[in-house]
Every structure is written in structure tokens, then in C-alpha cells.
Figure 1: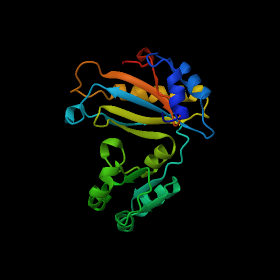
Figure 2: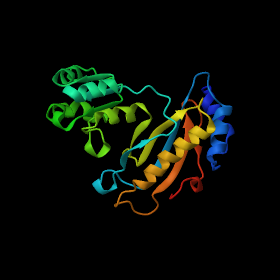
Figure 3: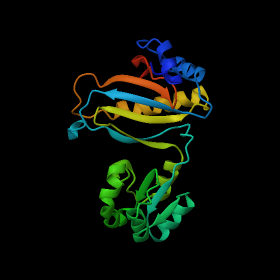
Length: 230
């Protein structure tokens, strides 16, 4: 018999059917923490089929306590907007030169932002940025004349959520080194935003299961009574 991993050993000792409060889940994850600062993640199983446009769930939410992650941001802008983006902390700012750089495979960014006048250039990167979920989108606030604020939001803890084919949203809400209150605040901000983003085509129960986990920890089912509007 193959030797179980540490994670498998932990899972084997837990009650798979138990519903945890957020406090209990965080305490359990801390009991089994690894030697590095793990990311705390939320998985929400939703009653939607994202193959249908009226059941797509996607949006942005600012996590009040930040993510604990250094977010790399690229901005397509010129002139004053380019200077504002750099001053706000953008990692890379450009126009045609940035497009060529990305076409050559330099895509080590977490967020790509563009001013509306640059979309003619950005549009040529659809096949490059699209599959990575990096294509600027006006509905998400990543196509905007206010690039300064967009960069600050991205650097300050704003995250994108998007439902996957299986009807699940995955998102990090911080690091295990965060205080419980900070993780709980971020958890509430994320789940509230996803509940608020319920699409018109969703039928039946919308939030079906919520799991809280860490990079190396077990997946713990959260009591849906902890989720407002679920």
C-alpha cells in the first residue's frame, strides 16, 4: 500500500461530513499548518451552468485586509495616464511595445489594465491574454480612464472571481499568518460579493457548498448559515 501523504493522514482523521463555522475551520487549519506561510482559499460550489451566458458569475471584490500577495500589474496607457499608472505602482506600462513584449511570451502579470483608447492595441492580444483570464474588461473595471485608481485597487487587495466550468469559484482570501478577524473579514467580503452576483438564469439553490482550505491543509465544509443570503 502506498504511503499516505501528510495531507491524506490529516483528512483521514477528520469527520468528512462535519460543517464548520469559519472560526472552527481556521482553528483546524492552524492546527495542521505547514512550515511556510500558506494561502487560505475558499471554494464555492454554485447552482449554475456557466456554459449559458445568463448563468455566468464573474466580478471583482476588494478584500479589506488585502491578500498578502505581491500583485504584478501591467498597464496599457500613454502620456499622462502612463505617468499616473507608474506613480500608482504599476510594474510595467506601455503601448505597442508592451503588446510586442506580451506576444513574445512575457506574461508574468496578475492583472492587465488598459485605458479605453488603447483597446485597439490590446485587442490584438485576445488569443494571448484571453486563455489566461487577463484580457481587460470594462465590466471588471480593468478598461478604465482612471488607471491610477485601478492600479491602486489591484495592489491593495482587489481580486477577481470567476466561476469555472464545473460551477465552482476558487479564490484566495489571505495568508494563514493573518489574524482570524482579517481572514473572516475577507471571507465575508468575497462570499457577499458572490451572493450579490447571482445571475438571472440561476435556478434552485444558488450556493450549494462552501469549503475553506489552505495550501497544504484539508478542505473543510463551512456551514452555509455563515453565508448571508445563501
